[in-house]
Amino acid sequence: MNQKLQEIMDNIQEKFGLGNYFLKQHHIFLETNGIGKTSYILNMEWYPNDLSQADEDYNPPGVASIDADIHTGYVKRIIFVQDTTYADQAVYPGAEKENSIEWIEELTGLEFGRQFRLVHDEGKKLGFQAAVDNIPVYPSGMIQVQFNEENQFTLFSIDGYFPDEDQISWEPFSLLPETTDSIAKEQCKLLEIPAEDQKKWLSVYGATTVFVSNDGKRTIPFETVESHPSTVRLNKVMEWNEPIDKPFSPVEIDMSIEVSEEQALSNKPGTELTPPTDVELKELELEIINFLRREFPEESGKWELREIRPENNYTFAALKPVHQDNRIIDRKITLILDKETGKALNFIDNSMLLDMFSDFEKAESPALSQDDAFEKLRRHIEVTPVYVYNRDQGKYKLCGKIDCEYGVDAVTGDVISLDEL
Image 1 (spheres, one colour):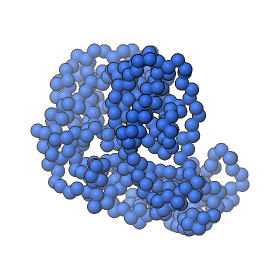
Image 2 (cartoon, helix red, strand yellow):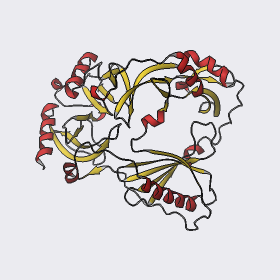
Image 3 (cartoon, one colour):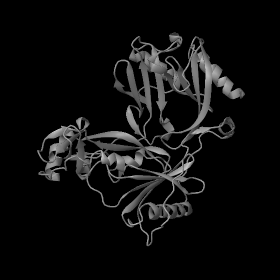
Image 4 (tube, helix red, strand yellow):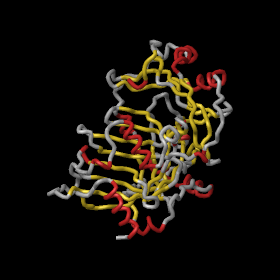
């Protein structure tokens, strides 16, 4: 056993009250946070000493699965299987919210209010979000704490990114309604949403989420902010003159992110995933077109390459039809390519998901105009200050988040909660 790994394991066992547990197995995997920094995570499965027999396929109740960053030693996740624990509860917080917050601060080094805020309180389940002086950040970080019915601690997780003060561009929030109203109106769009209880598509006006720079001069789509940092957006129509008669032959791929001890310990922490170069993009586009020429030979000009995203050992290419309707669930093909060779290996087609709605009644034509719908939504639209990560500057910039939890039925004119659809 490597000395560094052994030190982490010994520290975990002592710090988290696992004196009557033994380490059954461990492995190392690669993890990427919200701004593209990679970390090597040590996963440990601790079994109670008196556990007589275990299923090889499933962890029995009471097992503790704990993840820790190899290079920093910080604990990322603590999960006691099936809400059952035999750990010493003296080292964990009580079920009271204040105790949990103090314990999180001590464990993570983060400060409540300044770096994270409470967003969900369900008694025995608490959820926190990354923040700067109680202002949310995007991409966000999340913390969860959970207790069982006996008020015993059974879960902790911290994911995403929590920025430091030196990553923040400080400025007062200055967006005014006369600036955001016109932008919010542009986001008010006609959508078709499936209603399973009615077996039909509903025509609904909704305001899609968007971020607005603090000077009001630029909008940033929500998808862009939340997308993988190595993503390259292309929105390029794929065209070809001749099909390829030989069909595409998919090969089995291994999506595991497990790595060896040697690889994890030899790599420096904080490695950043980078987008493909222009030369690599051209080669990938050619391979993607050749895939389409084999799998969809008669559909030249009907597919658009939306984005390319390298991650771990693969590159993922997202393809969507050029012509789309207003349905919130649309056709998508994800092509998986080898990151080193650029060769197409396999693909995922969501057409089977769409088949689930094939017997749904078509949406009725809207009786309400976009202008009328926006007037009904106006008072429900929220503009809140948030910090959004600017990848070019490596800083979090103050923006306004335009969002709305409600929609307008385009046929009846009723204002409805989108969460209920």
